[in-house]
Image 1 (cartoon, rainbow, N blue to C red):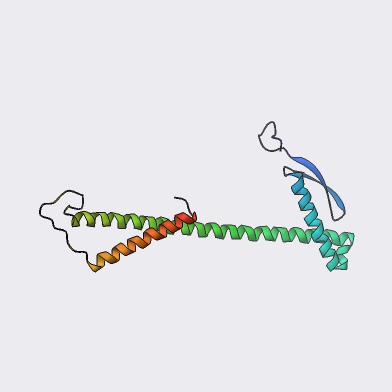
Image 2: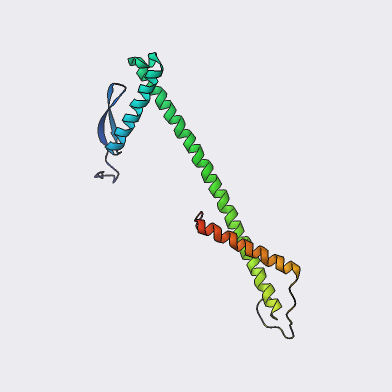
Length: 166
C-alpha cells in the first residue's frame, strides 16, 4: 500500500466489483485480493439464496438477498464482538487471580523466611539471638511447606504455558 502524502495514512483505491449482477465501485485501502475474495463470497451467498427461493433469483430478489447477506454479516460481527468482550473479561479475571496468587505466594514466602530465621536462632529481621535453639518441625509447618510447594508448582505451570506474562 502506498502512504498518503499528507496524513501518513494508507491511500484509498477505487476497485470495481460486481455484486448480484450490478457493478459497484468500492473506495478502500484494503488489498485488492481481499476485496475480490469478499466479492466472490458475497456472490456465492446471493446465488445460494437464489437457488433456495425463486423470488431471490429475480433482479429485485437479488438485491433483497444482498441485504440479507449484509444483515447476516453485521450480526456475525456483533456476535464476534460479544465473544471478544467475554474473552477479554475472562482474561482480566484470570490476570487478577494470577496476581492475587503471586501476592499470596510472596506473603507466604516472607512468613516462611521469618519462621526459618527464628528456627535458626535469629529474630524475624535476621539478627542473631543468643541461646536460640532450633525446634522440631510441627505437623502444621509441614502442611505449610506442602502448600507453599504446591503454589510454586502452580505458578511454574502457568508460566510454562505462557498464558499470562508478568
